Length: 113
Length: 117
Image 1 (cartoon, rainbow over the protein chains, first blue to last red):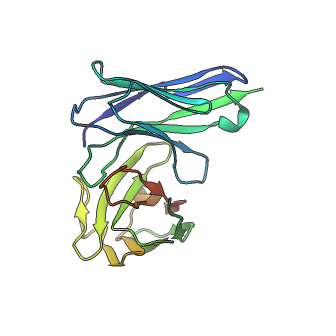
Image 2: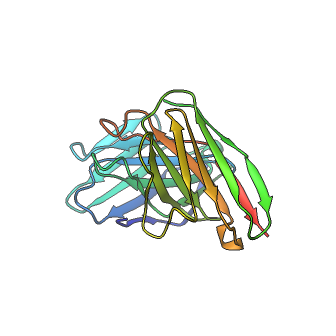
Image 3: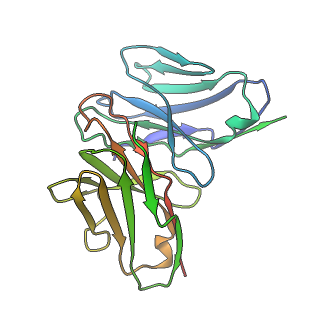
């Protein structure tokens, strides 16, 4: 599987702050980039996703920024809340490849009061 | 979306034994996937299981160690055979309700936490 690099490994943000998680990929054939949120003891849940035909996608407090030329994409969580404390995974796949997801290494986010 | 359940939710097993994990989906899906998530690590795809065909395994995973069944469009099993402590992980199934034709969106089950002593 092609690699997806994710940083930082862990992140502590104060309530109300902005959480930023970055990912970089190698395979230029990737054309779908989802973000998953995982709480302890639960399976990952799809949070938001983007395709490379747009540079930004926003859903509520969550925004993906996408830089195709740099092969990078990032998740921004605005007005971070303690309930956002979870592990976040970026992923990538190429359409038509049986949806095989390549996951980043994960970022453990802690939002403090 | 799809609602996915897994059984068991957790288990503690002795080395050398085998465990079969069940994955049930609330709707018919073509594509099901099995992942392994080692403690504190990311998810690694074990295999893709499509109904009516043999499972396709990723590099580093073999059928003898992880046999998979897919008897119908709502159910699959993964067996972890001849277990060793290195097999201690969370095993997750996921589905792509649209069969990879459009959104490539996958939904995950809650996982099975396996500890091998």
